[in-house]
Length: 327
Ligand code: C5P
Image (cartoon, rainbow, N blue to C red; front, side, top):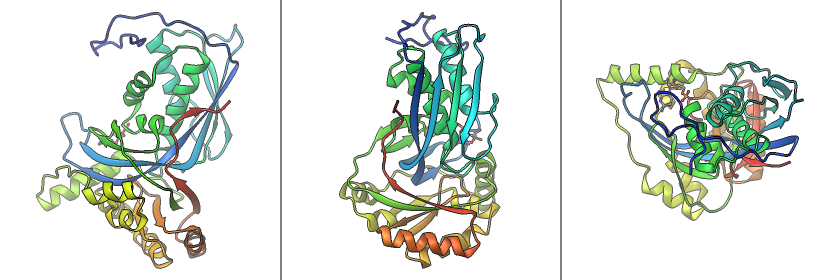
């Protein structure tokens, strides 16, 4: 049974008062960043969104959102404080704040919350860090407020916040369709090692999609989404890193490279240093290098670090679980 309140214009069920059972004063939630192992992009629909077929993998770069109960006289404000990590907006522009607000509106909660955010995923890097923050905030507030929404209901709210927000709730490895928000789990075996090359300046996702459209128009082609190739799902099922590397694909790469030509050198550096493949992560500009083992991860990280071609390097294994309460 749905606890979601009617959102005007969506044709939802009438409002329903949630049962309130939250007793904790603090709830901490961790949610992962992601890399797209496969991303095939079609021509935009009337709503401006592009149909996608994508494979997400959750990586061990973890965002942490702590939700704190407020004093009774706190007037229901939703506040956000940065605990650690790069400076990002802390007002309504922040997706975690919007997530808490949406959950409150959808369930009829009137109390506020103080959110604390620790960021590890690069900002505007094509790794859905902001989406992970929103996913974590949804789960943290659902637990703190005792609003009792089920996983499917949280996923439905997440999709209203952004195409990449449902995935960090689910984690592991999943096929994404529609805007990338219709998820189904994919069976995988083993652990994969990634090295991520960061850039100082992020890339705007809408800008990358617009460049994708311009490049397609220039070719006189109407792009269509391709299914995930069997060789990728087979590689994942077998835990075959080399076969997975060979199947990695990102339709947004030419657009990101056209906006940031210098990323081609980062990809070449990673591959020359021993990465099986290096690709643009999502809409970029982070470059994700899949490596066969820890020693190669070290060599690739060092080569990238010393090259001056990137602003920083992170290492992470994958896949990892989706958002979960940790305290
Ligand atoms: O859904 P989200 O707000 O994260 O998307 C940011 C922007 O990226 C959208 O406004 C749209 O311009 C673009 N986008 C798209 N097609 C998708 C996902 C995102 O065009 N499937």
